[in-house]
Image (tube, rainbow, N blue to C red; front, side):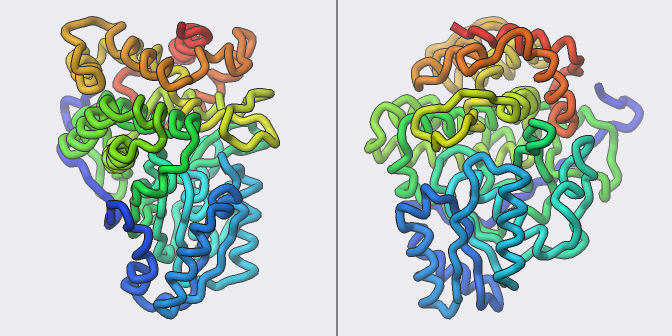
Length: 426
């Protein structure tokens, strides 16, 4: 992979300002008042989080600092292009706004990113979606300040430049990626995650796991050909700074994940999972993710009947963390040969009892975690069969932005093998 004549020697690192700790969400009004001349703000959330009263309390904090706030609670869990367009139209009709505050999981944060993008720049959502599904248009104008307040420990969207959505017509999940989408401030309050039910905790935690593992096993930044400054993208490949965040995230997750799912009132486990999510977000937001996430997009986009516990039951869905995890064991078996020692180091970080091993070591550690936190036993358990593989492969191969980060070249046949081996994991 390395261009020996002109290899890359530069990596970049970006991150939002961060405020972390119990009670951090009680200071958002003050934080927003420090971001400049902010008079009106839109709080973006989903109906479930809105029912807790948290977004309204955040809005009331803003009022004490002279900021008029409106709450929009129409963000969809696992947002679609249609739900994002509805949010954008609402913001356009009620605006203009000087800032946005996202309160919720990755779905609310990603919806707020889309709203911010399309109320500050012209054009349609599809123009900004990553190619080949969209045009990959870059925003021409700066965005307004976005403060992200995650209520789940997992997505890392509060740290990243990426907005993820389902394109309904194509039955595929994809994204928009640009540095201007990154929130200016991430407010991570572990207390807000205490009400996550078990399956939400499990799925979100597996998203942390895949963020850290995929970034840690990603193609090294030095394996790319040298880029001009204007060509550099947020996903650099594995690099020394992202590695540190990912290693720390895996160590915390290995100790706290099972306890957080088993006992939602375990304050220490919840705190460690929130910290692991933050670390993993700071890692993958710069190194990038690869095959499990690329596979997860069509898995989520083509679901027919599956309805997971603890999520809205009005229509079928596969939660994001679940969708990326279901092929992760076999994906890491495939990538093992690119850097065996790095895969084994990751396995030891997740499970210190692991000693030496081979290509099955990391997949076995991931499978054990998945089984222990109540994940489905494979793609067949959520309604897929061998007859779906060709369509799933097509959806994966459309995610070239992600596949470019993989440590091995990936063919459609490789992806098909991973999907088939993931039908039954245990």
